[in-house]
Image 1 (tube, rainbow, N blue to C red):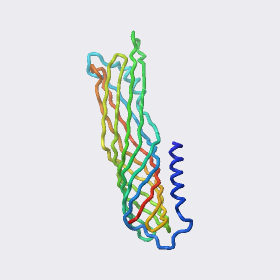
Image 2: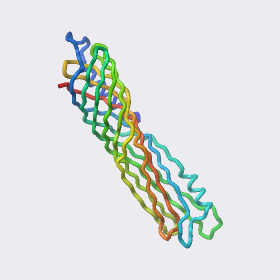
Image 3: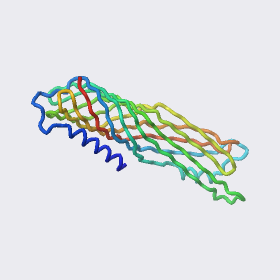
Image 4: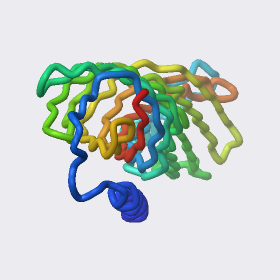
Length: 254
């Protein structure tokens, strides 16, 4: 996380170094269409959840092992960092010191979490069963559409935005035990959720501006179920993807 924070700070310094110390002597207006690109870091607040249930086979998983395994893998949270970058476009309309607008962007969202748990049955069996459970939830792209409200002070513009975010959330789960029974499942769903955040922009010419922005995204959950071989158990996996992105952008107003 420190590595991505340092990279984002370096990118900000490079862009801001291009801003002149004294504002231009023209009347700056933010009204108009604009387009640009952003780079930064993303920190995912992802979670994995696995649940085991009794199957319908001749031999089924013992209730005591179900309880122990479900307690072991109820929820597993992570905050892995990754890269975030996007192309963006939008329209602003300035009314004195206030501004309304609409922005859309499409880009890369590097968020994933992997879980791997092993458990050995405590039941008094001649050969105690050993269970392995694995799951991964991930996302690699995002599209957002966000109305914007802002306040303008000279060449500066401070804003907040809130709207929708769309991403493809992938889930892969696997079960295996020492008796050779297995189960595998995967699911991928295009999820629509919330996207919104805060930011500030500085116009250093009538057309060019730099922007720093924090964006929070929540895409909900994706889930899937599958029986193990021989109907020993049923495994259900559930993954959730949330993310905080910090991005620096360079925009051109037409």
